[in-house]
Length: 170
Length: 206
Image: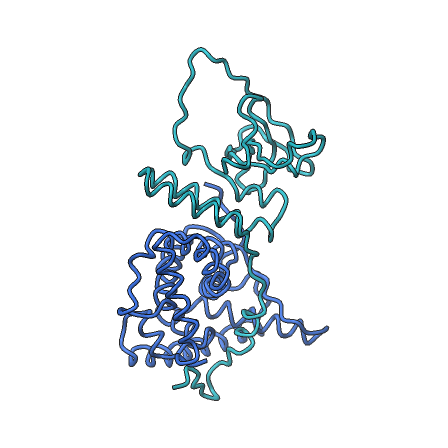
């Protein structure tokens, strides 16, 4: 049985079908997929399903889009939002240094009174300039200041103590 | 492509799903590589949004990770199971997206000059009209006319009789034709600032 039984008076969907078939789809990041799989297996045993699922979602988002979108957009899709992160223990005696947001090139101006979101991202060290040799394999955590239009306005790195995330821990 | 043609592929997908349920990492990577594009295109055809299609693809494969053990070859094909999941995720997203505005996609077909432009316009009009159809007609058109699924395979995913697929397809095509005629009439009357019924570009960061 053929699935296509068109009437000459009915719309011909062949051009749309051809366009969909020719449409490029996001590239597959195998390393990110494997990471997602391992996190899932780990979460199955630890029971931290909800938070882990959120993290996996964003990791998979990175897998899908990092090659296709690249650059800052790719980084934004690797985000792990503050709300999704497991609560971090508060070290009462340890003072934390919080850096100011640095404006991003070509980003729109920051306007007082406008609403912004802070989104935590992990940036591959290899994408940053002026790093010592051997540091390019890991990731670094940063906060992005994102406007309501979805465009990032600024970036900050949280502190030297928690900056580097080794590749092995991904 | 008939269901018989798809049978070997489907058996392989089923094997991969079983392996994923057993904890085989490579099987997950392989299934993703095999089916990611199909799921993405299905979601894009339904929603006419690349961002939605990406989200749906991710959600579907997370569901695969979590629920692969529930797949049962006796109950249906691996493809049906995967797209059944994709369909639910798409419908959820479409309900959610009504509150949002969305990106107008670029669908480019390789042609030169005027021919390319005309084809792009035609494809854009077709897709816009398709996404204005009620969901029950849209999904049948996407499965049968765009993905070239058989009525039987579509009926299995939609969990309805084949007769229902046929009648929805017939009614959907008629509605689509009417929408296209209506669109052409509108275009002839006055230049519209935006396509009616199509959500406009804006992503919301929540």
